Amino acid sequence: MAKEAKTNAMRMLDKKKIPYEVLTYECDEFVDGLHAADLTGAPYEQSFKTLVMEGKSGNYFVFVVPIEKEVDRKAAAKAVGEKTVDMIHVKDILKITGYVRGGCSPIGMKKPYRTVFDSAAGDFEEIYVSGGRIGLTLKVRVRDLLEVTNASLEKVTAD
Image 1 (tube, rainbow, N blue to C red):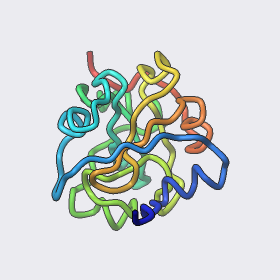
Image 2: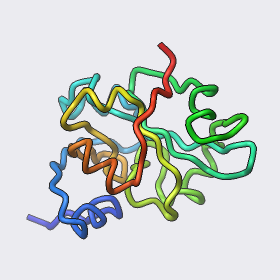
Image 3: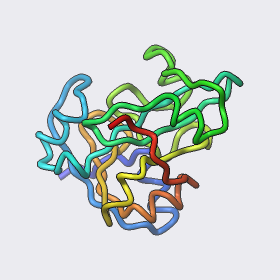
Image 4: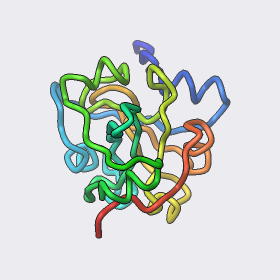
């Protein structure tokens, strides 16, 4: 059996000796978080998507939120000390993060951007996040994710 190629996210977790579980699924193109959870069997409430936004300052920020929720832009801006934040354009994801749409992991981006996990992540010991490519999900302890991404835990979703 061929050895699976490691993503930046996996390499970073390995380097820090952080345990994780790899879940793979068959997929040729972008699928949203709900479909990825269906394909891996991950519970929706423990499955999180990675969104990259740009602040009025021009700085980029990473928000990790439950797959069934939307970012509250006001709360997100407040969490990172910006007046406003807006989603980056899909065509810019690879250039900014090093990852493709549907495979954007909060771990191991090209640069270490300020990262905020929605407070809902704090309800679980482990959550599921993108592993750094389409068809790859990682199950990681929340405390390890916060440490490796140097992230805060704040309410940034709309109810």
